[in-house]
Image (cartoon, rainbow, N blue to C red; front, side):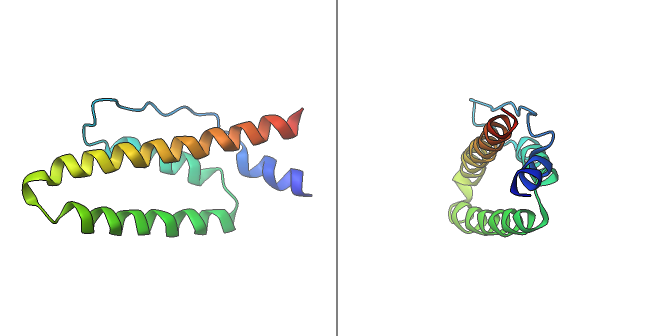
Length: 102
């Protein structure tokens, strides 16, 4: 049962998301990584990811709006970090899927 849940949760998780080393604002990259991860999770994990994403957005808004002159760079750095975290989770799910299939 557990294996079946994990396999269905991880189906299609192998999509790679390109990370940008130039720290440009990458809202589309974060959205693509989030959507790819979200689509492959069970309902309870989707709720947890949604909550985590909301908290990240609130924290980013709070931290990046303190200084209007650095807001764009702050948002770009936050997006770069979030993209790294999301792709890290994708890799772990893909590794788990590979482990369960072998």
